[in-house]
Image (cartoon, rainbow, N blue to C red; front, side, top):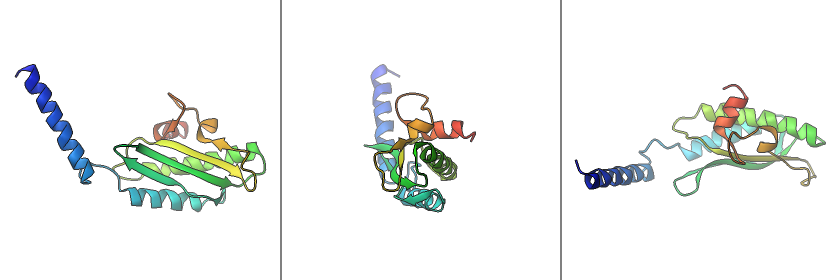
Length: 144
């Protein structure tokens, strides 16, 4: 097989994979189900006071779990502890979902009435590479 034939075959396989993914047949997650599972798990925590977790899984924007949450705690240290509990819950819940890929985790928490005291996921779980925490980082951190 020539190099150009191999190249054409690779392009064709890529196009077919993209089309299957766009049609929902490429093993991608059920965004609504994953988002509902994450929201339900986080909102059930006593540390969660307000805000929603968002889940996005798209070919153009990537896979992201995000949210700006009001968490139980009066100061930064207490918010860090609350955020750790939220992140562990996100990790456990996400791990139970089918068809999910590694996602960036961009969740932040702050105390009620104090948006200036802001704690982001990377403040409490060290990313293995780059500035953003991933679901793989969470699994490693929490032993999952």
